[in-house]
Amino acid sequence: MGTLDRVVRAVQLVAAVATAAFVILLFTNEPQKPAAVPKAGPETGQAIFVTRCASCHGADGGGGFGPTLAGVVVSRYPNPADQEAVVANGRGSMPSFAGSLTPAQITAVVAYTRTNLG
Amino acid sequence: MARGTTPDATIERRDHVTLLAAALAGAAVAVALGVYGRRHDPAGQALFTLGFSGTINMKAWLATGVLALVIVQVLLALWMYGKLGRSAAPEWVGPTHRLVGTLAFLVSLPIAYHCLWSLGFESHADHARRFWHSLFGCAFYGAFTVKVLAVRSRRMPGWTLPVVGGLMFSLLVGLWLTSALWFFDKSGFPSF
Image (cartoon, each protein chain N blue to C red):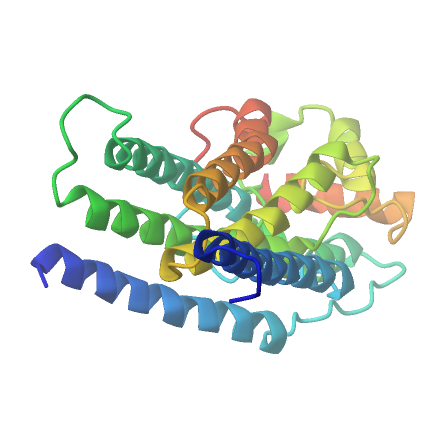
């Protein structure tokens, strides 16, 4: 067996192990459920961000599953209403939050991202 | 051998039965992935981003890498089947074809995992892009299963490998068009 064949066998073995890990992780890796959203208060925007946004956009808005918000969100959405529309209606892989957050809560979390992250 | 049949006919029937079994296995894999994606509560989270600014960015670039590898694999397959040039393919072409295909599969796994685990299966045809992407994704791994079985078996019709390989390539192009190209179009290129 040549060197190339041995490399192929080794990579195929890695692929088999990766496939097994893929299947196992699908069934064993349970996602963390977000905590309930507070209804009112000065910390509402931050609390909503932590419970609804940070899992995708990162705890500091630095990105993760979703794109980076920190440092770019204000320049990307000069008008806060445009950003609120994205949160309400969803975009691409981002789900709509119109059914789980009130308009006031959406406004609060958008304000938080623009003030504290943007 | 059944009475009144020639050896060739018997072999042909055996080959078709083997192909049918492989096709059923591929269909089972595709359906299982679809059922998982539909039933599983989408996590909406990322396991890792590999240094990209977001998981969707990582997925778009990994998908582009998979497409590049598969294009190389198709070219190597054409060489093996004598469709490129007049000279026979060197000995290294076959193993390299398998190596590139295996690497493409490996690179595709993090993408598939985040699609299934984080987003799930889009079953509403109203969301056409996500709907077709979900279908293509499940069908791709079903076709991959058939191809792996076909490679391992000598009891399949000769046209099986090129046909299934072509189907996989078509599905992958469909996957890339409905994900990475869409992402680069919406977010700009290169969007690391």
